[in-house]
Image (tube, rainbow, N blue to C red):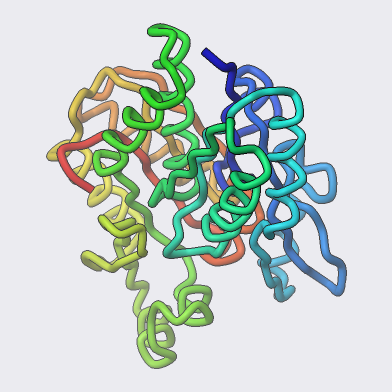
Length: 290
């Protein structure tokens, strides 16, 4: 059996330490802020999340760019030249062209390396949701010594049980991304309306409710977890955009509802963070349905 690597992109929201522990190959997306284009790497060498969200909160504009075909070609070919196959798990195709870039690179390289397997998976996920898929994939591989085809089938089988639920602090970031109208953003901001959003079955972000006030919004997230979680002892993830207070409050509500497992907390990295904005808190868990 040929050895293989697991490849992904930096929107998985895994730290450098986690990347090393899981033995992943991570390709960076990029972002441009204050006229500078920076790499979105797990070690945040170009800019820390804290600095990034401080700049966004102060009014700085930011644009983002997907990992391109050339990046994937170079990274994949390096592994192929070492005689290894590749399982690549990518940021949702509904939110980025990163997955398409990986597919194009893989198709080109299959002609050059016909003996190799290059399998590309659309995670239909983002942030810690994508990261949690990778955590489970690596654990399953190590515990059961899975072949690349077996691991590919396993990851695809759990994608639709990966739940992504989140709230945002400022509707104007969603307005810029086309998620809400300018009028709704203005009125919602004035009234303190908090939309409840989720990643749906196709990897898109959809609205599934709205409440007034932060505490009610966190309670809604906790209620969704209470109703849908498959196992309240299993690991969950929380990503936040410079909102430690909200993260702690949400975790406390989850504990009240019987959650006893490990929580992997992380700052949103800049690429996904640019689209949700400062103050966002997102909850990721395995549930009965997305």
